[in-house]
Image (cartoon, rainbow, N blue to C red; front, side):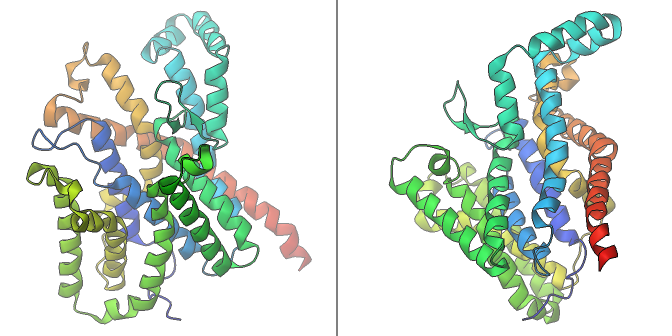
Length: 375
């Protein structure tokens, strides 16, 4: 089986694509409407899921050793930090808490303790920290304490399934996970069964995770052909895919009835794996994006995805006092929101996420060391 030429280390195009997908989700939540009409995330969440499936297939190609431990180290510590912070930040009045912490620390402490008396909020935060979906008391939908955390519930479920099936081998893991997600999606679409396993994990968007396996297999099989093909051809095909992504996600500007067209919807649903596959073929062809700002955006993408709703909520609270923070004020407000969200994410990435990752990897190495010494 052909191993792609760039099969070691980080794939820069995927890193950049992940950053752009996170930024697109921020764009949606900033409520900015393109041409005053379209509010879209350009299928950023679906692209995230495809990348997750691809990355799992990519990092386990050499074996399943420490798979679950590495996934936990990657996603859990910073998620817990942001969730705990969100619990107090939202419960204590955000900037009022900061003012009280500076000028009335005793009062701020009492407010913090009072927040812990809200049993429902505490339980929901704990459920979220352990990736247990729960029904929101207002909307009735399954969700998470952090608004965007619902996707992590699905991803963690995916990791657990992959690790369990992986006891029988990587190939069995891919097949088993695919069967489970396909069965849940079928039950979701064809039955009225309730409960999180069908209503939540069976959402159609979950299938994009296993589509990442298909993307990996196609890249693995045809990567050499992409590396030998003319760069102009690969770049042109990738450009067409990118244009389709923009056009179909803004289609309501000129084609409001797109949802009634089966071929258009089929193409729309295929776009996330096509976008990831195009990025990989570009990488194999030697067309790699390594522009530093976009690479940094990829580095902070996970934290950006987690924290941006908190930043937007805080901006909204103070938009009346400081109009520059009004992210609903057209393009200028949207750009301010994107910049602030990225700045906060970068600070969290540098000051919290990276040290936590280093510590987690140190613990993992420490656990391996006795075995290596004995060998």
